[in-house]
Length: 59
Image (cartoon, rainbow, N blue to C red):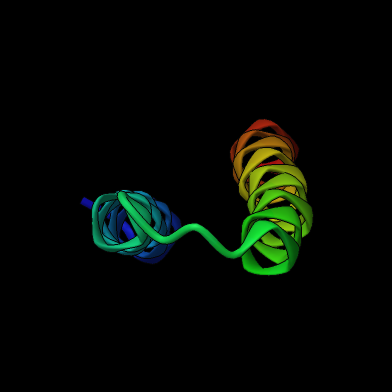
């Protein structure tokens, strides 16, 4: 497993843990912040995957 795979797996685990910990929290503003964070992390995750493939293809 390379560094990008390890980081993206840890990001997935962290976001899943955050999602589980948020269950039952009635604060709508916090839920909205989580959605913004989740979108940003998903974008980063996708960009890292694309970068990894581009680096492999460049070799």
